[in-house]
Picture 1 (spheres, rainbow, N blue to C red):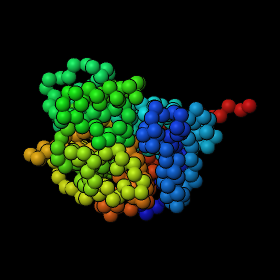
Picture 2 (picture 1 turned 90 degrees about the horizontal axis):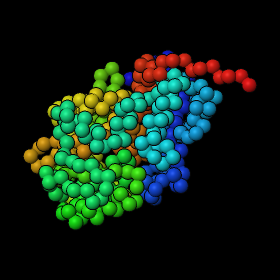
Picture 3 (picture 1 turned 30 degrees about the vertical axis):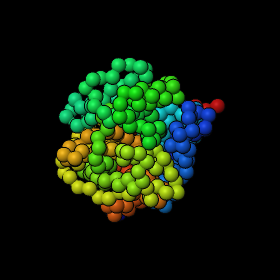
Picture 4 (picture 1 turned 180 degrees about the vertical axis):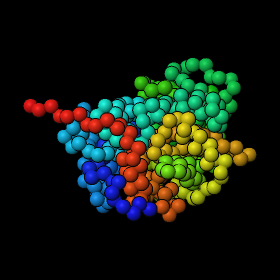
Length: 345
């Protein structure tokens, strides 16, 4: 527990995704971001309680001007898209770096990697972290790698939030896979598609929080509503505001082997402060890292944030988490350069 507020910043800017429906290619993509300001506000209220002045700032074209005006001691970075594009999110971090403002979360390189599932898989695979066999598609009619075994799940390579991970996401044969690829590439023409072998079994979340010691909190996701033959975190369940807790339950899970895998993956992908991995375990007990998120939804349990729910599961006060995050950011001072003087006139 932090006993003194001495190390806490006086002014904190919470920068969140500037969200408009027109920015997003589909309604489901918009749904994952539409509550960005509301989520920022929920954390802002906690930051206010611990004695800092809070400013909510949309991550848009006026970001640098707003930060120059506010001159915050720390930025809490919640930007996960710019103009509806996930892969542009690291641009906001570039602004903090240029302005010399300490910020929470992963830096530019790690954040950029997180928005490319294929590159993430490559890095993990080449460093001994188990992943399913996979293939990247940029055209729906590309040849399928004969080493891939059905069932196969398809995901948008550069888009997070479980977008389009619906009951048709898993294909059992090439005909279904082609239909799925054609749908995704047609509706998201700027995105590539990652196809990977679907691992039948348990799903586990690995939450990493970096402090004086990096800690891993594991939780198994129990899916209570089955929408297809295969059980996974369907988009419809993840983003159902009224019934999320009814559909997905988290229970503590312990395995030091998986915890070490998660720590190693965190380092390999150049993450910082906190991150979350999705892992599946097959019937033989083998783990497979299926997704990584360097900037997961970060909020208290009552916002249905998996991060907050997992901390709550381990009886960790979210206010203390926020305090520790801010103190670590001030002490580590990413972006150590001083804010440039604002030109007069």
